[in-house]
Image (cartoon, rainbow, N blue to C red):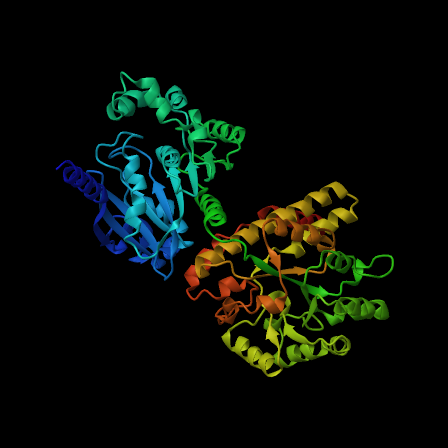
Length: 591
């Protein structure tokens, strides 16, 4: 009888364990009926800042975790697909700072919109502030299996304040977490008590079991600063802190980063000039979080970009032998480019030398050719007849030279990317270009290199080479930020790293810094492709539905809702620093 009895107890144990995690209820939340609606709407419609919520589904859930019934919230994209699981761990304790719809909107909706399934727990009622409720966090992984869109092979965590401690405890207990982001965390609870001694009586003594008789061990068990070697070594950590946080000293994150460095644990530290709630820095914080999660949970091996160069040839950039130094550098690093030829430049000065300069560009195998008109006129300000004549005139030399090298001029780029002042003008020129076998060359990224070039040239001409170098480095830094932004925009709207098209010019700053920019992009895993290859991406098969004259990115032109377009543009990293310098130089010259 002993063997059957033993089998019976084993079977009971297995059944109990299998029932320790179970989704009990799942209820779709209608935002219009939620407590968040007055904060995110106006005139009963979502405000511009919250238009992205239209693309998300929100659920209230309850689930069984051990012997407890725990509540939580889920946010996931409405679109089809499987999205990496991100567990959000809230701050506070018990009913203090309890999760609600507005909390998850503020803290996680931008992340969810970029292609993640967010699951968040309110922890069990008998919260031990870093005790058994860690099971409620890890059990969300099993709960997420009840949702069709979740990919649990890729799991990240975001923890805010006390939630950062939950992240560390999860990394200690589980090997399934790929990466964790700790925001304004306190990895050493002894130090938090030095700053906020009232917490001992109001939280620690009330919620941590046996705290009075086991104080030191209880604090150490909840302070990862003392046991970093126990963290899952295959994971990674991103520490983020506000330098004005009056609740948690940001030096705690600095110290934890140093501790992780000392044991060779992969980590990154970012400090923001803001407070505990990240006032005024939420968009920047969201971009940092999404960038980190994308790098750890999404495939970045297919990031590709085509380099396109307008206003070729620039006769002012001759070397001593009347060759283009920009072309020479591009040739040496073997990167395909597309050039947009402005033939009117050839007839300014030494026409023969300028024609030879153009031919040196066209002769290169890695160069694709496009028409940029003869006189670089604005289409919105020209008559249809004058503008089409300018297009034809821009082919007088290009056609004959490209024929020599078995090429053609099949692409057309509008000067200033001005496609017309309204939909009618836009339609008329589009029809003309199609009839003449031109393909309109779009772009997704443009960093106002013309403005950087103006400032850069000013300092070079003034003999201030040090300041010129600073502007060159600023050009690199700000352009890389724009690459990050537009790639995140691609992930948000198309759930992939779309092939980007970068627009720049044949000018002095690119002569000296484009090669460096390309090398920086290579270190960020970008592959360089031809314009033809980039145009094969399905995103470029969309209709351009923007009908004003301003030369905005095609990412914006594809957004149907004007308010959504405006909102996306508002989040773009600004170029305020270079713009201010540019305006100052212009003003001084006028004086």
